Amino acid sequence: MLRETRGKLSLASQVRGLRTRATPAVLRTSVQPSVVEQEVVEHTPEAEEELTKYAIQRVNDQIGENKHGRLFAVIYLQGKQHLVTAEDLVVVQGPFAPTIGDTFRLEKILAVGGRDFTLLGRPLLHKDLVNVEATVVEKSLSHCRIFFYNRRRKNSRKTKFERETHTLLRIHRVELLHKVNEAPDIEGVDGRIF
Picture (cartoon, rainbow, N blue to C red):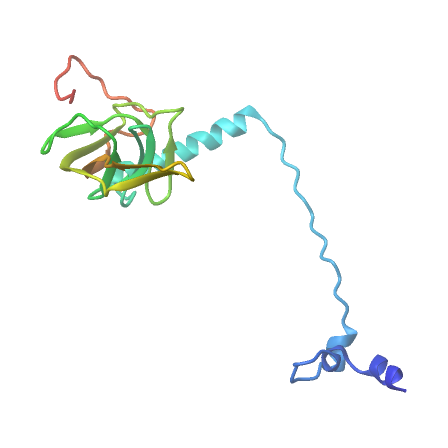
């Protein structure tokens, strides 16, 4: 008799912890799988070229009107990649040649982007497209790392201490110098930072 009553009760009453009973209308409706119709789009080089031109035009409009928001850049420095924006601090580990107060331009830029777009390099973006400037703020040593070697039952112990040099950089600006696919005419080396 208990089994018969369980079969006649609604699903909601069989589950422990539910406070409301399922209405008969909910139990009668069955969930029908929705039929999704797929649209077949043929791949043509003309359509792809038109889409590329449209995307580049929208990016150029944002760059021209300065509506791209705060720019970010992915830079390659001392064998590591860093995601930076303006006024960021970056710690470079290991020996680094510039001294305190030196301002320089970072030229190994892997990607740059704004609010609605990202420009990726293959592998690097051109030097004349993006300008990322940084200044050395501080050169210091890292915390002391201790390496302790002990050979059991040999009365042999060795302790080594190691500190690594760190250089702290302040990123001053990340800016796009011109629109995408529009290289400026440059004669000579005036205005270039070496």
